[in-house]
Image (cartoon, rainbow, N blue to C red; front, top):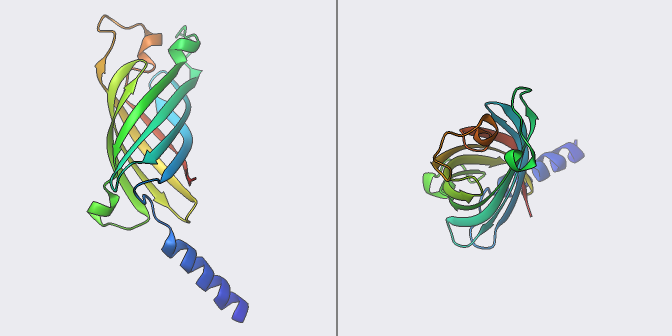
Length: 163
């Protein structure tokens, strides 16, 4: 019985001390699945806190499962973005384990915006979801289906880690 109480207390302490975004010098790595029209793929991102509610980072997407009727090479499937986040989970005061972050990104294919949320179960592990939308496409001509792969609304979901 004593061991069960001790384990319960340690588990509650671990969950109670997890925090989604700690501010300056906080590092987050996320990896997950990317869902969109015409294919599904992988998404990975890294965010670094430069202030109490501001982080900068990189995000990359690679579309793996492309529809058979789309002729897409590596450059059509891959995108890399520099990103800016306003981490406002503490402003909303929902839960210290929850972070909500709208942001902007400058990618190889477009200038876009994203809206994300992450929840940490422990100090090192959580889950995230993120919606991305292009705000200004660099190529304003009619895009081929392959060029549309990284110029459309996408949703990502996966695991988030404190580094």
